[in-house]
Image (cartoon, rainbow, N blue to C red; front, side, top):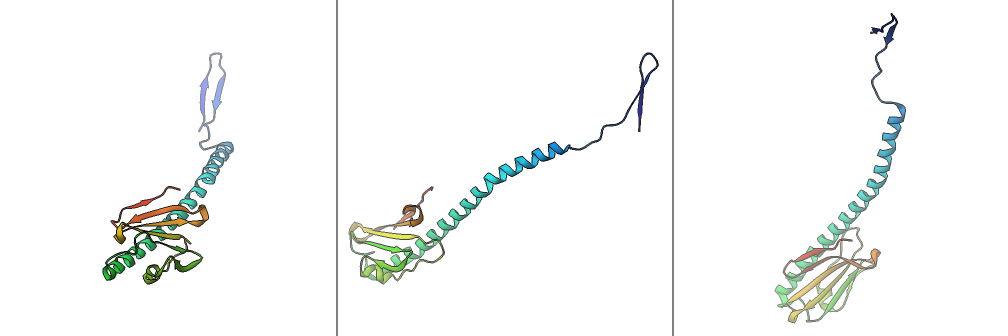
Length: 155
């Protein structure tokens, strides 16, 4: 469809309608912006997903160990000797620290490769369980006590 205007003086101007759409430069600019944003977002998403799996495995294993501790306390009246410390490392499922730890028969599950530290206190009636990530300088990622108060570290 053509539009015609007549200017004073008798000259007619014919104007074609402008084509709708985006230019190639506009499309390339949008693609570049999407590439930059995805280049930042995807690695962040993958690291958060890895962290969530790590924390999930740590919490699940800590819950298993807590149930074993409660069972041990039901049988012996205490969680262990006051001041005792037990550890389970990802390189070895065998605990170090004494016969009470061996009696728990705890073997960490999952692929997170965490270290578990158990400290008995308060005449054997309290404990603090810490889960540490050996790949990040043995950083504590999860802590729980006999009352069930848990904290997840932001790392």
